[in-house]
Image 1 (cartoon, rainbow, N blue to C red):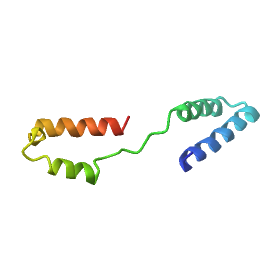
Image 2 (image 1 turned 30 degrees about the vertical axis):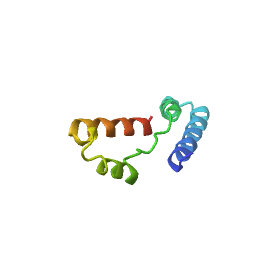
Image 3 (image 1 turned 60 degrees about the vertical axis):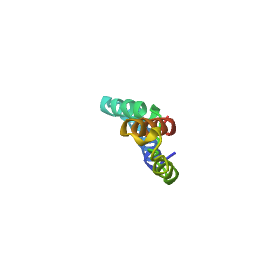
Image 4 (image 1 turned 180 degrees about the vertical axis):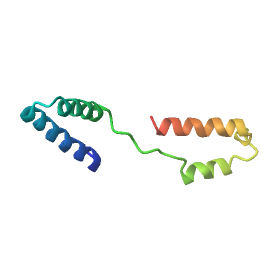
Length: 84
């Protein structure tokens, strides 16, 4: 769990306690909103092209990957696979 998610979890617990003690709807609403946000999956860091990928592209001169369309399609496939 990231530091931000840990802080959000602590804030959720505090809001829940405050809502129970103070019976104030604004605390319950804020706790519900934060709980919903925490239920979302954590975002993964973007995985870009590696040095090996760029070498592959550089070494593909004179092949079917030597056209812009083919090279762009290959790169898009690589990135799509890495960032599932």
